[in-house]
Length: 365
Image 1 (tube, rainbow, N blue to C red):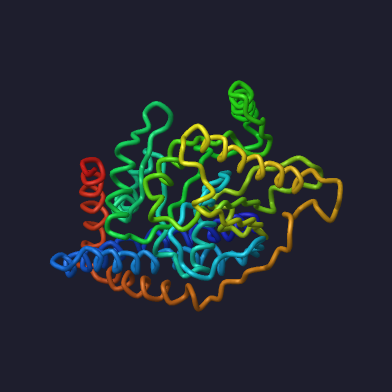
Image 2 (tube, rainbow, N blue to C red):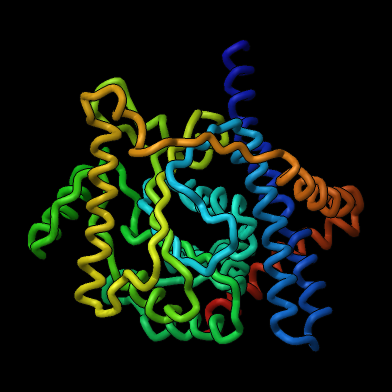
């Protein structure tokens, strides 16, 4: 009985925040739909501002759980600009919680509403979320030969013409690095060696197409590229062996006590436009990541192991930045669930919103 209670309590650590984040989605979509109707006859920039503001509210609710609820300690190496910028955010990729790290940095710049993602194509089938990420400016891409360069250019160009604020998150590795998947890592290393590129141990060989298309399409619109390297401290064992990064449920279950984030701002003027040189530049950026990660995990110097170069500063996010969003969306959701008519509206929003969303995301450019 005691064991059952412990297991039940542990599961609640994840299911409670998951239920709130997913459960408030219909209320959020209805709020968005109302704003869309109000702004239908107004200039598109008005709707974009409203959309970014609403997105900021929902993502702040998400960060309430990932920062305040989990009590995770965020340690940042490097200086994050205080002013909002139009940027492409490039990061290593190791787990389903990686996109949260981009949100953590964006909210500290007051740019959370501007975050948009380059996502793998299969995610567009997510109920409600798949459609909404697309309309908010997210780009769905297919891998390798199926990558549609023209579609991505068209999507990004349409937003730059409107002057849409951009915080575009890309994970160039294309898939998650898992130290237990030895074959995937060896295949990536073999490809680097075949192409005459440096072999990487703690990251996968980056794919350059999406990053290159994004930067070149928006070059005149961008201020910088943010080169970000992330380590979840639970991946650091007593030996030099690296452990898998936490999944999203594990993160919410408070199994990640600390996250190390190395931040570097790169001026767009420093990035070569030609594809052959860009490929080399991107790989060199991942060589630097790999060297930092090798030191983090394998250094015999106790002053270097378990940290990035430079001075790390603990960055605490005040609960006042996220709690109002939780109260606002919770306040919209609860009345819907407490009445029969509200519950019907709630279910219809999930069903019809999902069906219309799937149709929209598959026929829109």
